[in-house]
Amino acid sequence: MPENPTTLHRLTTPRAAALAGVLFALLLGTVIVLIRSSLPEGAEPGSQWLEVGNTKLTVAATLMPFAGICFLWFVGVIRTNLGQYEDRFFATVFLGSGLLFLAMMFATSAVGAALVMANNATGGGLAGSEIGVFGQMLVLKLSKTYAVRMAAVFMMSLAVIWWRTRLLPRWLAVLSYLMALALIIAADTSMWLTLVLPTWVLIVSVFYLVRNGALGKRHHSVSG
Image (cartoon, rainbow, N blue to C red; front, side, top):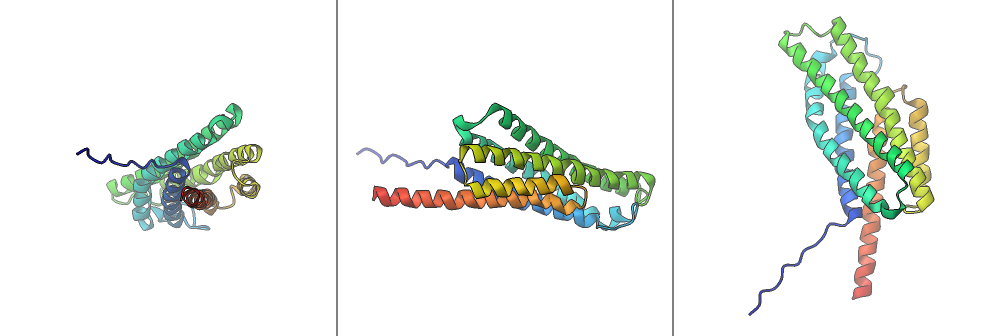
């Protein structure tokens, strides 16, 4: 008697993108909150932020590589979803800005974790010192000025691609463009603006999940 063949279910690109995007949004959002709460708005430069937020910075540095993995997966399946509609120019800008954003966030979390380890190794002598002030300003500059603007370019390039190809609704392309424009203009005002990217990725991911679920139900009903 022949054995029943095992049925394999392939994870579709939209669902893979959505799952990766949701994980990235949650992980990166947590990293940003941990880093920002360690460096509160209005805090005096060189204050004892290394001692108060050392645990938060360490946890953020631990989570960031996993957020990066999810982001790379998200970018990969988005590109796969574009397929033959991917334009070389916009694809280069889209991919390059995304990787630069990820590198800036890696550097931000790495600098914070390194300063915490150095502060612990010196018995707390780094907190409030010139090196501590430099580290604090470096973390803020990397996240507020460079990472945020690279995130804006990443979002804007995808918005243009979606608008021209109509692979996603026009409202989502317009929303992406407006959110990216706000980031470019107001990047230096607050590090909390970095949360715009994970929020945007979460919106896109939820849309993918809803649309993929609707298409799956429609296909099932037609087949039935």
